[in-house]
Length: 289
Image (cartoon, rainbow, N blue to C red; front, side, top):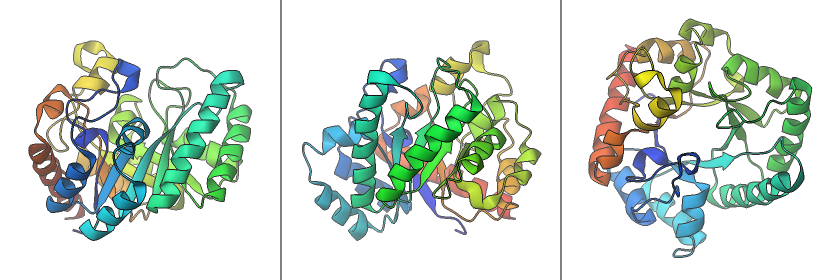
């Protein structure tokens, strides 16, 4: 495999929903069982969510987790998620505490990057200059921990496209950060896949695969994103074109797949590992052919 593959957090979390959808974001699958399963399945990277990790670190020591990851050959660690970094008041104070906790875990685990987002449900509308200034601050905080932040645009957020996101990163001169490009968010934001060839490769921190119908299920963007994402190569998104556009930028990093769906949540841990690895590997191989 020319690109290593990451078993992202929510894809392997089982019957678990995002907090934005009323869930706990705590996987019913034991943390160590997940590490062992994804390693056996061929993955060399793994993602962790902050709420889930906080829960499981009441049962396991983070040093034990780092040792298990090392022993299992999991060398690409991804943490999420940094949010509310552009807010003010009590919300910002709570966010800052959470950000420092996530960054400390990332440092202890030797993370590849920490994912960050704008606003999940479109509640905020910040001017570009404010986002630039606040992103520079959070990037400086990440640098103290030796971490790279990966900022992910979303179609229902303040900033919707990879191109808009790169302008913020560059405006902040935040060289320890990059844009995180998820195919679902890209397609649903109406971004032409060919336009991704224009994104500077050294500003791409990571990518995620997935698939879906040509139009959101029931015309509802939120429902589609939470419940109806398909395995890469099993929908109408044009995964091959997406990957080829990304590869043309010079991006050589590991690749994840973020599959939020009713079907994926019903899979056993072993089946989720097998099905997702197979679909991801086939998609990458096809794009490289």
